[in-house]
Amino acid sequence: MARHLITSAIPYINGIKHLGNLVGSQLPADLYARYLRARGHEVLFLCATDEHGTPAELAAAKAGKPVAEYCADMWQVQADIADGFRLSFDHFGRSSSPQNHKLTQHFAGALADAGLIEEVTEKQVYSVADGRFLPDRYIEGTCPNCGFESARGDQCDNCTKQLDPVDLIDAHSTISGSTELEMRETKHLYLRQSKLRDELDAWISAKTDWPILTTSIAKKWLHDGDGLQDRGITRDLDWGVPVKRGDQDWPGMEGKVFYVWFDAPIEYIACAQEWQDAGKGTDWQRWWRTDKGADDVRYTQFMGKDNVPFHTLSFPATIKGSGEPWKLVDYIKSFNYLNYDGGQFSTSRGRGVFMDQALEILPADYWRWWLLSHAPESSDAEFTWETFQTDVNKDLADVLGNFVSRVTKFCRSKFSEAVPDGGAWGDTEEALIADLSTRLTAYQAHMDAMEVRKSAAELRAIWTLGNEYLQTVAPWTTFKTDPDQAAAQIRLALNLIPFYAVLSAPFIPDASAELLDAMNATDTAWPDDVRSALTALPVGHAFTVPDVTFRKITDDERVEWADRFAGTRD
Image (tube, rainbow, N blue to C red; front, side, top):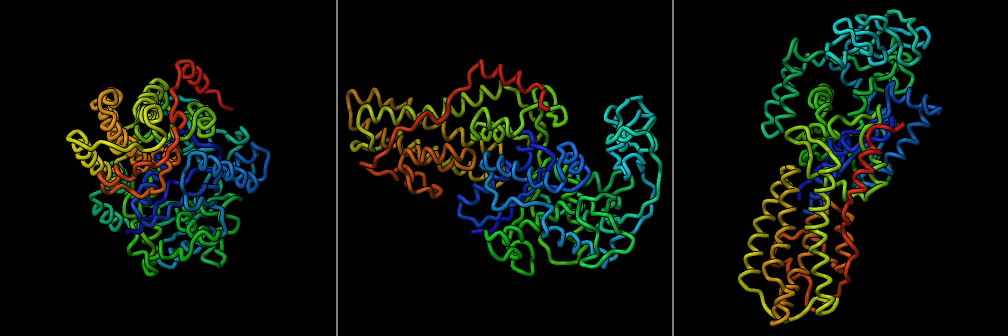
């Protein structure tokens, strides 16, 4: 049994996330965590809400709430939705927690002691009307390069040119609309990442098993242009972790907070402290400190590709630079984007399906299966209502659900609601066991390697073998001339149901639990041996015919949903 620490990129607090966010981090992380637990490993699976920064302040103002209250409310909303999707976090924490405040300040102090923090005086845009310095993304104007009228202070989304706020024509605050902007001096702290470039480069180069998507992004940031740059880690904001050097005040940094991208990854560690403080576990340091037992932990992170630079460079720079024995990530599983019906998911425009809406129209397993079986691993993927309907109806309703229904209803009709006696296995059954054993080995190998789509394809193939077996032996025909042999065939098929349920649980946990309950199967151990698994339900074992495991999506529903989610969410 190994020990596995798993973290998912933490979702931002300002609103409910769409399905693209879900499949890019939390959902595949949950798949892996559930699989490892099923194989008997010790797992600590952590996630949290990312609560600091200007977007949280603006979202709170829009909602008419104090920012702390808004964040607390949205944490509960996101926690409830995560539960709705059956995300099996051991703890779902908050980056605004006292634990993260203290730990972030601790890391800043350690980095300063190591000579890796520099105080820099710079000029930034100040909005007189708003009474605050403005982050680049909250300044808009006309792009001097292409004339696009909604270019931001950091980049033009139209021509992609990198910009500074002073480059914009007719710049204004996106908070108030005011054009009364001026450049004022302010002092900030910078993490001297450039001093760690060679060490980070060597570390990443040694990760030969990482996805190319992960390492290529990291290398680009390390070497393109002038290479890895020092990064500001403080902001002129009210909401966030107050800047301190450990537990001491930091002269000249009064009224400032740490930049959200400095404190957010540290929350991964603080979340384990929250987990312990909530009474859910003990000795959090054995997961995170190599001097406290974390040497034998394998740490895996899941994230979308936009988060890769911070997790491959900035967060490791924080850990390495501290000089302290913190656990570094062993493997980063990164994902491309899931696009929506010919375009992009858009939180701002309400385009696409959001997590709460998805659960309103279908149970979680439908979404879990489709998203994971189409995970954007090697390239961007696209959600369309046509493929969603087709794949759900085929894979879940026709292949898995239909198999369960045919077997249980036939047994009830011709025998009883109990595993029948009689007959014996022959060459066809032996061939099925051999095929299932081969497929099971492949399925486990793909799951171990976090190859999500390949895992789903292998699981689908395992389900298909059961249907092909039924078609080959045709127990409904066999029964007419040899009821005993039909009993043997149905006995094997009935045993396939809990076998399928256990293997499928990481993908479709609710359906798995329902099938195990219907089959009155109490042994949920991973089936290391197929032959033994297919005799687990003995003769006379009672079961009930389950309700429809998965219903089909109708054409009318597909049309209605496509129209509903075209881009109208407030």
